[in-house]
Image 1 (tube, rainbow, N blue to C red):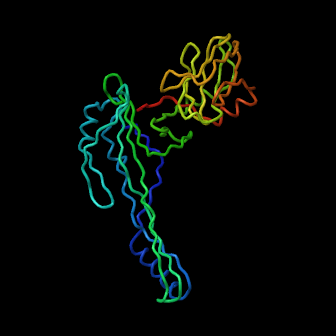
Image 2 (tube, one colour; image 1 turned 90 degrees about the vertical axis):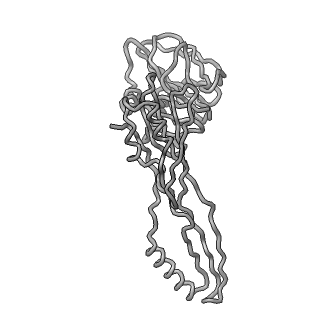
Image 3 (tube, rainbow, N blue to C red; image 1 turned 90 degrees about the horizontal axis):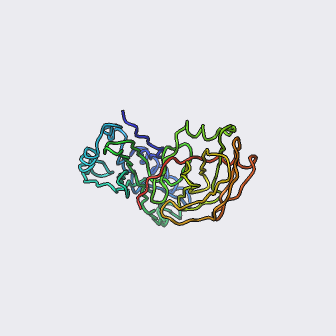
Length: 299
């Protein structure tokens, strides 16, 4: 069984030729009897998905090796609107070689427009063509320490992230969201008698994924106004610091947060520094955000 988790991709259905002929015929009749008409027509039908889900069934979580993934994609067959191609795909590797990323481009439906002025056949027509639009499709593969597939995802290049997706694309990185169970646990704000819980969320876009450190790594990442980070720790005063994920630079002054056993405290990050906030303000902000479990970095 494969754990490929495709995100929703808007697929344009091919327009049947007979329907197009009928449409053009109707518009021409309008043109003959009126002063102006706009005639749209397709200049490019959408290519098929270059990574159809059924063709990736060879990836078996916990079974397929790195060498097998390489061999299959080195002889990858896919269709365009015109031909069937066989290409040698090579992965873009993460710095630690834990992640491989494959990409192919797909041309989408594009339209041209003819605008006609005047009555009957004495009119004047001008044609305008839209530029072709493209969509990138990705296969992201994660390997374990034994070079066996740990997880795999199929997605397009939509940068928008929300809790309905298991994975999303952000700049050069892929963000893998925490599971539903983990999110549910993180949104349980009941006090813990032998620990304190600290929640931090981003108030504005940071453009650089960050981790939160306080002697140890916190759960989650802050990279935009849709994310939060949290952890359970011993009670006391905690020296909290935000750090860039792509380097060693600190992007905010350290903040001391006092959190005793049984406390649940909240803070937001405005792009420059952390600000403690009340539970009444913090809880609704956490509930409308999502938790990023891990990030696949490629640059």
